[in-house]
Amino acid sequence: MNGEANLREKIICQASHWVEQIKGELYNSIAIYMEVPKIKQKDLVKVLGIGAGRISQIINLGAINFRLEENFQIALKIDQIPSFNFEDKEEFLEQETVPKPKLCHLKAIRRTPICGFRFFIPT
Image (cartoon, rainbow, N blue to C red):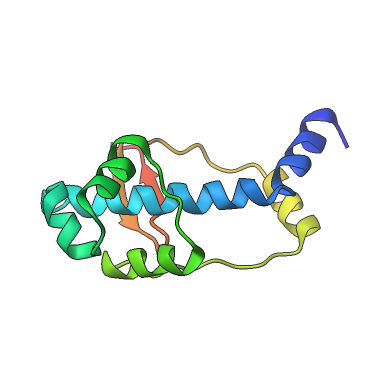
């Protein structure tokens, strides 16, 4: 295993890596939820049932420090289904070494359950 692969394995074996990934997905979902119909922070307070100060922390600082159940409740309130899988580590690492097509962050074509995006390069 080369140094880069070894480092990647060390990273993915840290629980904090996966926690931060879920937080990032939730943050992106909230941001997209606000963008589509141009929802303001005060409207988000009503939708999520969270205080205005806490919403400000989420939007301005990306500070998402909720329990797992609260993350799921927020996702469901913004019409997202929290979905994740448990995978065999070796199979996961092997899949990461398979070359993937280059993605361009220019135009979103579809939201996925945890609000990942699939992007394409416009022609």
